[in-house]
Image (cartoon, rainbow, N blue to C red; front, side, top):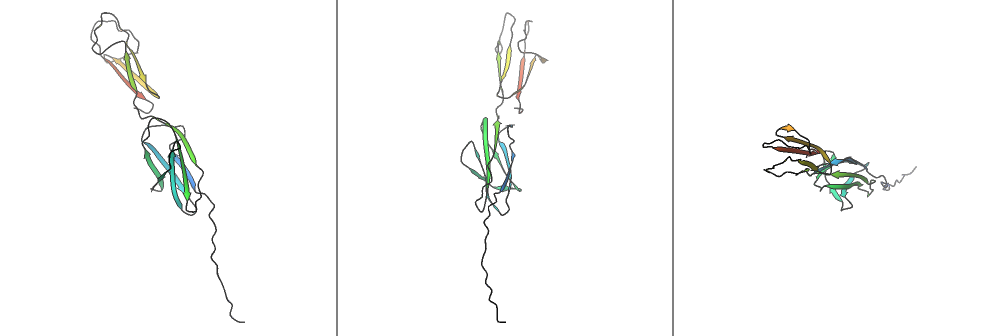
Length: 173
């Protein structure tokens, strides 16, 4: 036997597997305060190129990794929001888009007092009406002269009165 000549050739297999993406926060259907915490976990069998999100069909925004996840604090206005997230690997494969629909409420409730005015002087009984205006109302606490009181109760005794109202929404504003 004489010498055997060997040859070699490079071989590459295309990566056709999309990255995995898990949109952890916010939760679908949640009522959240602003800034809204965004948290995504993503991985790939080769290497991720980017993880991105967008709000209500806006432009995609690329997230930088932090502590093994992708996170951001999103300053969003009050209202309904649709958030989408997607990952892309170095081969250009895209994960399926994950989406969440949630509601942002960063506003405190408004308190309306009707039927009396500040420092008003009345010669007859009055019936103050107090109500809260908020998209996601919580609790309305009323006190008249430091005692629990109910809106619409008649005040008919002579004297000075102090009406206090405290309102909070479902998020504690």
